[in-house]
Length: 281
Ligand SMILES: [Zn+2]
Image (cartoon, rainbow, N blue to C red; front, side, top):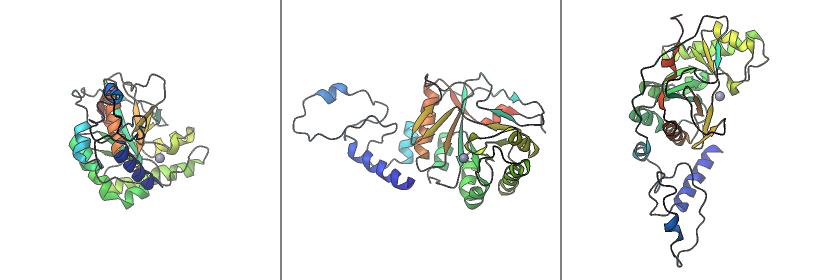
């Protein structure tokens, strides 16, 4: 269903875009052009501005690269110290005032757009991947390519079941089992965790800590089909915010939309792992 939707969206882009459209940087620049008399032109549907519109045809890596904002240098990270506890901390956002935000990509089984690793490498996008271990096992080369491009693999359970209300043993198996497998595949044990659907209870955070996941994350914005959805009316990304997207067909658009939202908010994307300090446990 999702790939079909992606194709339909692409076709819609082809048909709806006037050939002279300059691109997404000037979506509101032509009201007077639109008003000028064009009597012989067949009226065509003019849908509301789409978040990402390519001038013509399928969007290439070069086109995506041309749309990436020019960020100021990221600040020197000041790590947030997580004190030792019997439970993993649970954060909606990183408690930092530094002008950075974090891009996270979840799951891994549904879709893995082929341009994504190279986009991340060429644009230098810092990403944290919260992976389900079976997807990581099946598509290891793909996630290793993102890792080679600077991404970091973290833990999102084995079966993507909601953990809330489940027994300690069940939760520990989901979290430790995935961590063990990810460590085997990528040569580094995850230390960060995102519970499926963000759903968790005290047992989740205790099990996460016992498995070596010292910080667990929710999110502050979601990105899907190239659209950033904010949790507040201000529509701004704040320092320390965590943007959530998924390995879905529109991941290229989602990455670009996240970068633009971070840029518009006066922030720079940074790597989540650079902002957390666990005392070398
Ligand atoms: Zn998920």
